Structure formats: C-alpha cells, structure tokens
Amino acid sequence: HLKLEYGINDIIELRCPDDSIIYNSEYSCQNKSASELLLESLLEPISSKPFIDLIEKRKSGNVVIVVSDITRPIPYKDFLPDLLNLLENNKVKKQEIIILIATGMHRPSTGQERIQMFGEFVVRNYQIIDHKCENENDLIELEGYSWSGSKVKLNRYYVTASFRIIIGLVEPHFMAGFSGGRKSVCPGLVGLDTIKNFHGYEFLSNPNASSTIIERNPCHNESTSIAMMCPPDFSINIVLDNHKKINMIISGELFNSHLKTIDFVKQACCSRVEKQADIVITSCGGYPLDATFYQCVKGFVNCLSA
Image 1: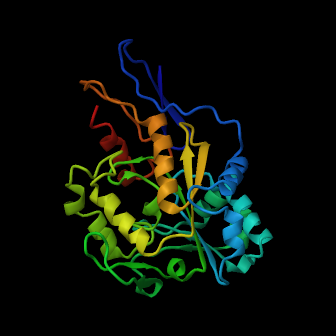
Image 2: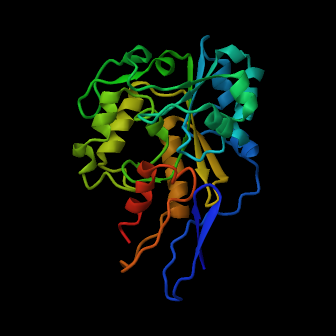
Image 3: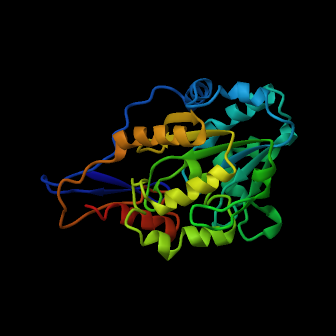
C-alpha cells in the first residue's frame, strides 16, 4: 500500500504491484521537541558565536525576523514563541521586533493564515509585515551588482534593521537546488525586477537550475550573491520529516549553516534513481504544498529523473 497526502486532511491509498520501487524520505526518529532543537542550535551554531552573545552586542534598533509565507509548511507555532521570549529576555523590546514575511511575488498573507502559522498570541502582540515586491516605498537599492550583473532592490525593513534573523525550510528545490538560506533574501525580499530575472528563461533553461544541484546553478549563484550584499546576522535552518514535523534545526552563519543543513537533508531524502520507470506516481505532499497550481509543479518536476 502507498499512502499519499492530498489537500488538508485527505490520504489517497494505492495498491501497487509487488515489484514497484518506492522512494521515500528516511528521517531518523526525533525525540526532542522543536523548542529543545531550537535552543541547542542557538547555543552551538555553525561558524558563529552563540545567539545570545550576538543579541547582547547588537546595535539599538529593530530586530527583523524573516519568515516564509503559507506556501511553506513550517510549524512556527512550535518554536517562534521561544525565540521571541529569548529576544525579550535579552533586552529587546517587543515594539522593536518585526516579523517580516518573505513573500517574493506571492500575495500577502491573510489574517487567518497568520494565525495558522504563528498562533493568535504572536499575531496579536507583534508587528507582522508582508514583503511587497512592487511597492517601491518599501525597497532600498543596494550598492554594487548581483552575480548576473543586475542592480538589486531589497526590503527596507530588512536592510535598515539593527539585527537580522532569517528562518528557512531546507529541502530539495526544483530550481535552486535546495530551498532555504539565501532564498529567504532572494527571491523572498527583493524587488519585482530581480524576481523576474531569477524566475526568467535564461536562468531556468540552464540544466544546473535543478533539484539538489547547487554547483554552477545560476539560481543559487544569484540568490547567494544578493544575500552576500546584505547578509543576515543569524540564520535558522528548519528540516521537516515526512509528516511535516521538525526533525532538525541547524543555526548559525547563513552560508555555512545552510550547507551543513543541505548535507543533513541529502542523507535523508535524496534517493538515487537506479533505473527509469514506465509509470511514476507522486504527490505534492498535501497542504499547503498542493494549495496552488504553481506549488504543485514542484511535485511534477521532482520526479522527472525517475
């Protein structure tokens, strides 16, 4: 029997021939809570001083926490309150904290989606802002040029913050090799012209703009170069298991912590396809991954190699 998640609560069950090849993610059982995993990663970050040390030495001003929108199934409710408490216990005022949703070109989040993602307490008590890539008033042009030789405009709240934290989901991505890390900045927080370039034919027609490939991948190179132009002070990388539960959190300096998380994910969910099949059955992983046709495309593309 093969069980595929579909929509918000549905499961599609299929009886497959005995000689079917089934590729499945194999994450080890995680007995620690999301709070415990977060705290451990903040105490022993990759290529960075411990999180508390960095917060204590920050300049005065806003602390911006960059998060994903509803198209990523990160269970923020399980750990974001802990992060917020930690900030406030270390002399960051509530009114200095901005939760910035890295929408890229996606629509703004609804009130109900925010409650679903962050919980009512966070929604009621903290400033939450959606990035709007077409709103010139919310963008600042950076000095220099990206990897592709382009000028870059980036979200004003992010650029002007005294301390920048990004939280991203790391999994195979059908264009950028792997999601998370630098992708929270580009395409998450850039202007419309940069997104058009990033999602344009020149980038996507490159054979290296593909799942699990980051070497010579133009999408990876572009987003990395833009993140380097205005890097976060701290990065929190989330890994989810087959049931969308947090399996691992790896934090620290943006690029090295992201690469460490990629290595972890590769071990768990990047099976080698030994031979191509006549028929491939896949799914997009249920809600919210199949909530829109655009997100569903990932399900189609990821199984092409099989």
